[in-house]
Length: 224
Image (tube, rainbow, N blue to C red; front, side):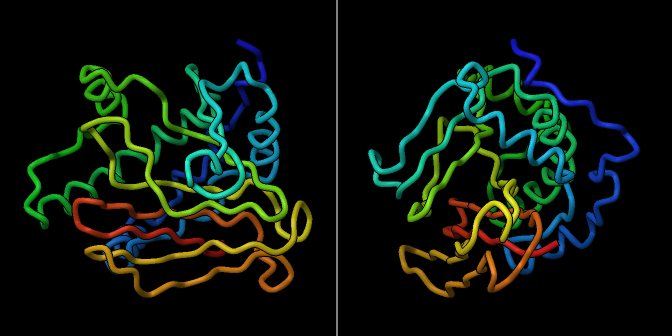
């Protein structure tokens, strides 16, 4: 595999260790989303975004218009994942699994999640779900992504982390990230977060809830 798939990260600069997990859990419970600032440095964001043209690093490419998902495209990473992607996923998982377990308990769902990401992957792989799901999205002017889910089997983790790798007003202008709530087929409560000159954010980081079994789909974006 090309050495493009690795990046050196100093442990002392790993911001996962400094996340206020009490605040994250409260935000998820209260609103279905929470903000985790500065998960990646600007250098790391540029590194990951520049992987997109290297097809050796990806298992598939999805052109959204072909599937009714919107306009634009994204690629699913292949194994082995880029080092920073793999480490970040494993580091975020344990605390998010605690929230996922609480939600399932509250909804009367028996499923519980292992305490480590490796154990959760083993559960998925043992059930035949062996394809990696981290992806990179690419948009140009006029592109958009409809709310949808890509599910590959019985085992689904109900939390998603989204990271904006491009810098507003430098790499692009305009754009919105829309939060909406879908309860029993009825959409309500749309909330728009604008990028570009209207709200000059820098590298926002988000978690979006998509707890289908609760009848709720929510995505959000917020500033660091």
